[in-house]
Length: 418
Image (cartoon, rainbow, N blue to C red; front, top):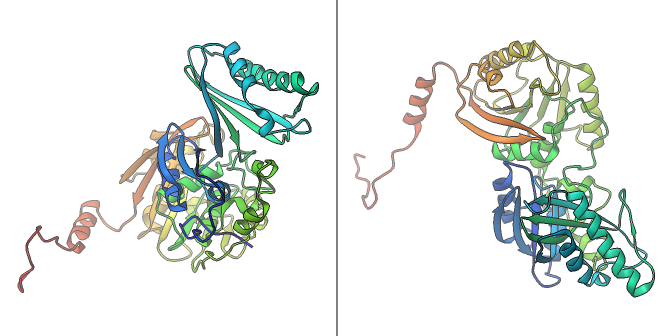
C-alpha cells in the first residue's frame, strides 16, 4: 500500500508532540520547488535557505517529509547551536551536550560535517574532534563509549559550520532521499532522482497528459513522472529511514502514515520512453519493473531522428548527453536531430531540455520561452522550455493573444456591446 502524496490532506492524523524546527536539504536550483512541496505538505514558517528550506512541524510532519518530499536530499532536526572560533571550542561545546538523551552505549553513530568558514579549513578534522568529544563524554561518565560506524550507524549526526556558527543536527533520513530504492541498474550518467522530480515539477507535470522522454537512459524521468502522476510517495520504496532507530520513534504513527493510500489517483495517460541504445532500454526496463510501473511506461529502442509521437499532445522532458561524461563528436548533430524531431513530430507539445552546453542547445534551432539554471551533480546546466507549434513564432503569439479574453479595467462593468 502507498501513503498520501503531499497535498495537505493528512490533517486527520493528530499531532503527537510539540512543534519543532527542521531543515530539508536539497540541490542548487530546487529550493523554491521544495518550499512549495513543504507548504502543500502542511509545514509552517517555510523559509528558503542556501540549498535548503527550513520549516516547522511535529513528529508526524517529520515522517511525512521523509516519505513524501521529491526534491529533498535529507531532513535534519537541529539539536543545538553555538559559536566557535577553533576546533577545541567545537570539542568543548559538543562534549558538554547531554548525548545520553539521544544515544546509549550500545548505539553506533556517524558524523557528517559541512564547513563554509575562514576559520575552519578541514571538515574531516572537525568531524574527528566532534567524534572524540562524544566518545570522551561517555568514557568519562560510564567507562565505555558508543562505537563509530561509517556504513550503517544507528545515529546520523550532521554538523554545519557557517563562519563561526556551528549547528549540530540529527539526520532523520540516513541515506540520501534521492536514493528512492527502486533503482536496480543504471547507465553511465544517470540523472539524480531528486533533480528529475524537480525538473518535472518545474515543468508543471501532474499527470495531466501523455509524457515523453526521447533519450530516456535508465528511465529516471519516466519513473519519477509516473510516480507524480499516480501520487506515489518517493519514500515508499525505501527499506528504512534513520529516524526509525531513534529513541522516540513512534512506530504506530509511522505505520499509519506509511500505509495510508487514500490519496492515490488514476493516471489515464501514458509515459513513453525511447533511446537509441538497446542496452539503456534494457536497464530502464529493469528499473521500471522494480518500481512496479510497467503498466504506465512504454519503452522502445528508437533513435531520436526516427521517433514518431505515439500519442497526442503532452509534455516532453529529456536529458541528452552533454559530452561531460558521455557523448562525443556527434553531439551537435544529435541536438540538431532533436530539434527537427521536436518541431515536426511533437507539434502541440511542450518540451524541456537540460544541458550544460549552450552551444549544443543552440543547435536545437528553437527559441526557448524560459531558461532555468540547475546543477546536475557538479555540472552547471541550463534547463530550457520550448513551446512547439506549427508555423512561425510571431503567428503563434498572435493566435495566443487573439484567444486570450480581454480583461475589463478595474471598476468598469461590461456593456452589452463589449
